[in-house]
Image (cartoon, rainbow, N blue to C red; front, top):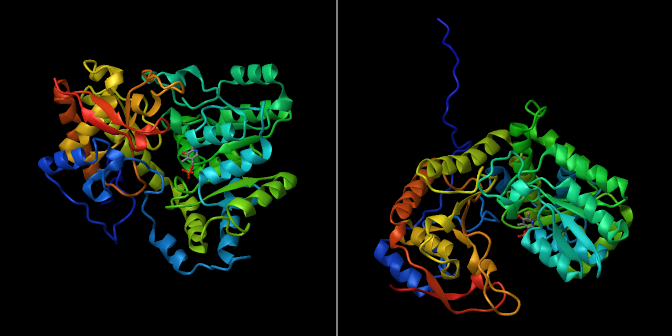
Length: 464
Ligand SMILES: *Cc1c(COP(=O)(O)O)cnc(C)c1O
């Protein structure tokens, strides 16, 4: 008798684990001491004192046996390394761009691009500039303008593509500023700073048409291009049957170039690149690359890094992997939502964002409710996330403090590192912290720098 085929609801990790890194269990008493010693700032904790580390998904992923084997066989020639040509062929195959300029990470590609094309008085529109992108635009003397759709700014609103650019605002900006003062239009896929929210193919195409109409180059910030391709496949009409690699190729076909951090969808621990079509711009960028990164056939990466990225770009597009990745994040989101915990909806490509503002309404923003909740997750379960709230954004240039618009705890997932039981554990700890939320207290900063203070500030809990 022939059995009926059936489809399981369980989405399993699409790999088996052949090399393990033990994680260290600590008691709550130990963690209380460790957090105190770290001045109540999780950035100052040692990695070995963290059980589940969700500080960032940047460069923290696990590499595959294919990547490691390529790394052993790398070519470390200073000029003309075959590892470079392997990376170039992968980048050309996926993006279609003519020139590859390797860099040590994403921000170095941004530095080269914006130093070359932008200057004082210029405006660079994007859906949302990532913080390093904004910093490099401003460092070049230009203005970074965020033009994401309204839905993208509302944490509770459901929308399949909350990372989309507001096309009306883009055209208004071009008319107001003049196309000669806009050296490039950028779009970030997925929109990292907006919660890892995707951009639709239709939106990318429309932005490209507007850019062409006004004769402005169009670049993609491609750090999470594979996750974006998956969202297009699963949410946009007409793409259900297309492969993620073809979707990625189509996304890039509308652009003149991209910046990339290989620490994200390059599936590597370090690396990045700038890729583009213009011969003239490529040659200018290479001159700066030699000055700041290195010779154009390695530009800040070892041969083995380029091997890891050349393979990683394809592995990031693997559909079984993407299904597992996006599902792991949605799975945690579902569990928290079921327990009544407010999160940014819908869950994005790389992280769950817990909204601590209402849940800890007894802690005013200037006493850092999201910071407090994040520290509670460490004390209760050894989990490290990151506050995206008033500690990160509250300090004003004039030295005063202003409440940030949101108080979020971001839990970013390293790629291929944690399994479903880790996620079940996370949910348990977060729900337990939520149940005890009335006992949580605010914090005050006792010492810290004025810029980027969250990295090194020293804090103390505020007692009743
Ligand atoms: C991480 C990231 C960058 C910067 O890349 P680094 O490798 O950290 O320098 C730029 N844009 C986006 C969207 C990112 O996620």
